[in-house]
Image (cartoon, rainbow, N blue to C red; front, side, top):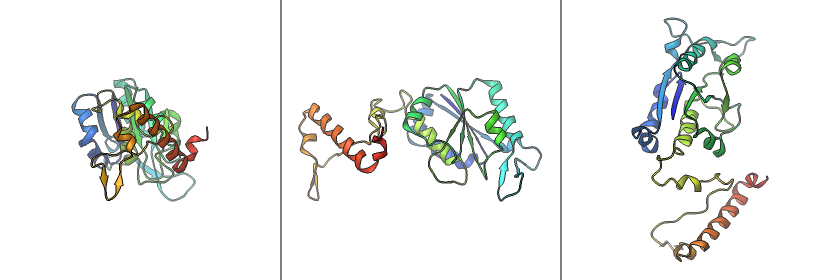
Length: 225
C-alpha cells in the first residue's frame, strides 16, 4: 500500500511513522508513506497557499490552486483508489472504514488546516471525507496519522499474529473483553478462574459474554442496530 499525505506541516506528522508497528511495516516494504509539503506548490515565492474567505469572517482558507497542482501531479504518476480529506465536518472514522481502506493500493490524504479548504477542492477531487471525532484540531495532520495507523496495522504481515486484529474492539461491533497476564493474583485481585482452566470453549464463551456486557455498559449505541 502507498499513502501520500498532503500537508502544510510535514514535520508535524512524520514522527508517528518512525516508530513501532508503522515503522516495521514500512521497513518490511508492506507500506509506503510519502509526505508532500503543500507550500512547494504555492502561488508565489512567499509560499502563498491560503487567503481570506469570500463573504468575510475570521480565519484563512487553503486555496484550490496549490492543492490542484499537488493532487494533479500525483494522479499523473499513478491511479488512486481514494482521495481522502481529513476534516471535523465529516463521517467519523470507524473500524469498518479502516478495514475497507486497508484493501486499497494507493490513497491520498489531504490534511485540512486553518478554516479548511476551498469547497471546490472537495467538489473536484475528494472521494471520501473522514473525521476522527466531534472536535476541532489545529490541522488534519494528527487525524491523518490516526487514520494511517488504523489502516496499516491491518495489512497482512504487519502484526506478528494476524489474528490479533480480528479480535480488536469494534471488529464485530462489540468492545473487547477484559484481558489479563501474569501474575494470576495481585493486591487481592485474581484473574477469573475460567481463563486459567484451559477449557477454550468456555473461555471463548466467557469472552463473548464479557464483550457484550462491556458494550452494553460503555457503548450501548453499538447495540442499537
